[in-house]
Image (cartoon, rainbow over all chains, first blue to last red; front, side):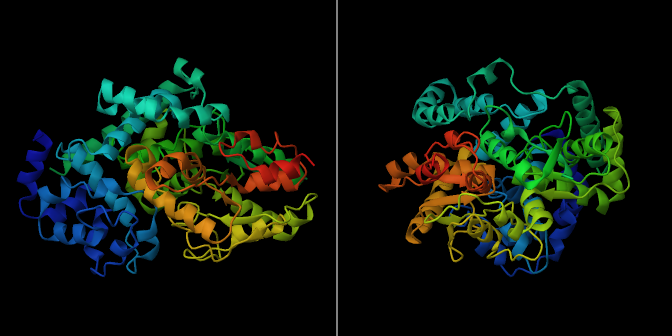
Length: 207
Length: 299
């Protein structure tokens, strides 16, 4: 368990709702949920998650900290925004799901080996390299996400798709040499570093 | 005089990238519609909706704020327009998030300062390309430019998620938006206004990380198009286009289906209907060829 996680446990004790309100993106909306379940019925991942959004919200109020932050449910969000569009209380549910997922990851208690967590991190790392996504490298990173042998298997299984995209000029093998990039990489990286520092200071200031 | 906009093309639009056929086909109709897009110089990725594992709220907001700042600096007075659903959504959300919180504005401004950039009090409006077509050009004007109507082609208008929610197009419903069907009709093709999967989710980024879950959704989207007698599917979104088009072989292998249905962009339809060549319409960018459109384009 990370140091930050321990600090947060000590600070908030049994008030997980307060912790979420203070530290999770759009977390101050959680208390507005009236448990109607429209989000659950609207979610395309309904057959798969352990907890629909309204249940996550009630678990937050009930102080089920570990269960919420280590849940795989939020990581299944496809960002379809159906829950947001339909919520009668207008909660920004999609953003709260992203925020809870990110917060669990930040504290080091997010689920291990959740595929979308790993892909999401790869995506961020990929775009941070050049300021723009390198689709070829992202694809390759994705195949090898579970190790080398599985990676070769994955790449072979997907080779038909890659070939189709290559023929349609929608996948460029030359991207391996660096690919598209912003010019002001140093400015972009300094900007992100600053944004990260501000955010970290805010969260640790809440300790 | 051409209508000018500050344009945010986005990663998938670049040469050799997955949505380059959207950009190509769109570029080919801009002259006809008297629209001029001025690219935002040195724009960066918006982190779409999937960067949230590594990127916290403020870093992600900073990414889109940098694009807004570059737009204000280089294309002053122009509205920002994006053709990618995720680009549009992230940029518009960022604008609203900054406008809604002094704390976020201050943090964003401090971060931007590191890149020697700034945003103004009144940031430009952030619009989707389809909004420009519908609101600034209009269905009638779009129709007037048609020289080769797409007669006899039945097209399922798949709007998808992020073009439609949470912002969508003014005056349209989230559950059954009609604008894509009207665009299909304007090009002379037959629309399917009751297409059940019009605003269903294709799985988005889960197509990469959890392909079985995403492909189960895509299966429904394609099945419903066939059930409605569609010859092809059209969409405004680069992720929808890719997810619904390129995994059909895998879905067939999993479910024993025989899917083979072209999925194009609205701009592909427009390019063909406006008499552009197959190449200009980026029909060579189809993984599943749109033969009916090729025939019209080559006529």
